[in-house]
Image 1 (cartoon, helix red, strand yellow):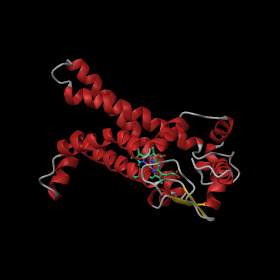
Image 2: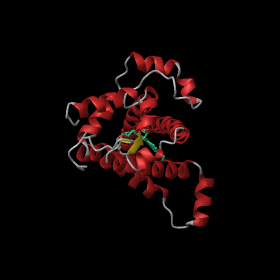
Image 3: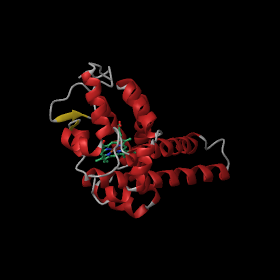
Image 4: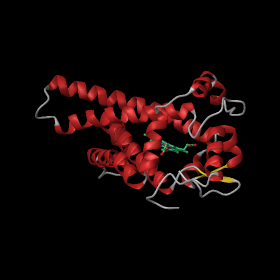
Length: 229
Ligand code: HEM
């Protein structure tokens, strides 16, 4: 597996398919860590009892510093993604905002998937329609949380009280939406036992054929024609 050259999925055995290359897993780890740093340090600032409780265990903790370090890491995520796996980053962006009629059908039956029944769902590609919506939401609300955060960090001398209040409102609401998305993301990760896709990079082919048959077909077609992507 090449760390920098990307979108090469030829490295899979009979039973397992490579779903996330090492660069993608690294980027996801930075994204998840920085987001959790931002969330918990932000909550400590907003809700003093939490800060008091945390300080009773770790008296030196500085939520402001954790928030700024988390913010720098969070902003670095897209740059890191482009550096380590440009093709994966492009694929994630394009697929998250592209929906076909199978996706629409899938969304109509999303409640079945929510209840843990993947068998019989309309056929999906590498990402199912729910994942596409989640990832698109992450892209959009990460952008609003970053721009409003930059305004709060560097705009104090320029923005008046109304501007700062607007930035704080957008910042808080964006973080709220991202947190709701994270709860759903974790729910599906554990209901469909998907964590190993992000830790090892591989998924069992049998499961992928149920959940992402169009993706498996595409991989088979590409390996039959000797093409890596
Ligand atoms: C903190 C615990 C987290 C866990 C356990 C987790 C788990 C996972 C798993 C298992 C996948 C692969 C799903 C699949 O394809 O079957 C995934 C992908 C993804 N997750 Fe998370 N996630 C976490 C946090 C986050 C956070 C905080 C965000 C965004 C703010 C996020 C955004 C994403 C995105 C965008 C992908 C697609 C990655 C790509 O295609 O490169 N995750 N996550």
